[in-house]
Length: 216
Image (cartoon, rainbow, N blue to C red; front, top):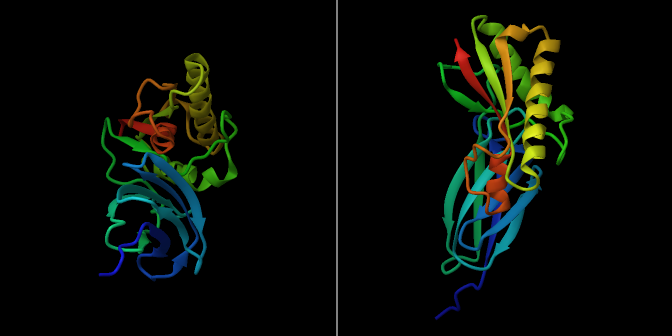
């Protein structure tokens, strides 16, 4: 009887869903049972891989600039295979947010700040321009921009940081010609988590910027 593998090499890459072209991607992966967190990148023809020492459930978030961010949940069994390969199929990001309705909240997945900073990184502009185009296409649209943090550090500083981040985004939109009267910005700090602040993967989910549809 063959000896079962002691570990599984998990390998992941990304492709354009329509063209099947290999894409460069970044991954945030939570191993639920092992309570471990992995972060890595892949390039066309060079997937990202790591070793799992036990059967586990993985929560995999894949990001590619210009494509919708996807989150997938999969079970990987170390008892039955030495290698587990997965391809994340990515859909190109649309130019605007669609099907908006009052009181709807949408996460701005590809908006980035350095740790503890409210200086907007240039690779955020693609996502913010999508929001900008949405506001231009819907002249009656009014939104609230909300900043959120995890629970690490001083709560007062986190609240201030989240407010500054939301304000920076509002100022970006205003600088592109959106009327200030259509925007509201609020910092919530760690008051509205969407996941437990237990492991890094969940903390990353809580460090986010969203917009709330006030009127449309």
